[in-house]
Length: 287
Image 1 (cartoon, rainbow, N blue to C red):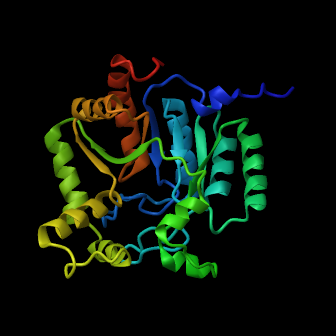
Image 2: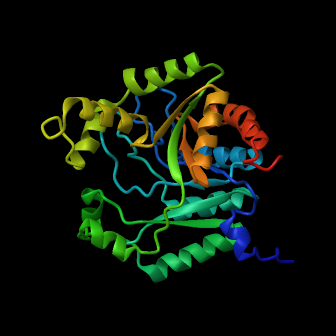
């Protein structure tokens, strides 16, 4: 017997009525999004991804969003040097879960749309309507050179990928029982133990250097990229993290894709402490 086909409304709402969707971003990449040397940094391997997906599925996390990456950034850790391709990653995780939506991230200039459509329909059948599509146009010239594709200028990139939809934001969460513990860990993992050689390599690709950027601004950008490739930092105890997310919802955002230094180690505390606070604020369905 076939499962009932999900309605378009169910698909768009990720099959629930949560006013603020919470997802996990970047788990398909080694180190996730934290450019750090700490030994507990994310592995990005398949067993850990499957375990994380099943943990997130059981905890009520809404979606998993991967990074489309074809080439690492080097540095001491070879930051994001090992990654799982996103559509096959999504298909495997959809087969391993029952409720959560899993996205595939596609670089529009690199994928033949007919082949991509076939892949995605297959993934969607596996997930019974839980596959999501994230279309991007890319920025790293080195990745495009691998495919023999010349990057368009900035405006033409987004004309080419006009189906790209941007509704959500991305953030990097460090949540601990106290604000001090959160601040201390953030400083340890992102300042003291950042992979600065990888960070500076990323900034150089974007032509952000000490020579063309004021010192204070350069250091601000540098730290921002170390903690999560420029994502919004949310650091604090459960009350503070929940309040920050509530403020984002009040500002009009309908969802946030978060990353953690180690997703499996940190997600249970986030789900146990932050999600109930969001439920009490009326932003999440009670489980």
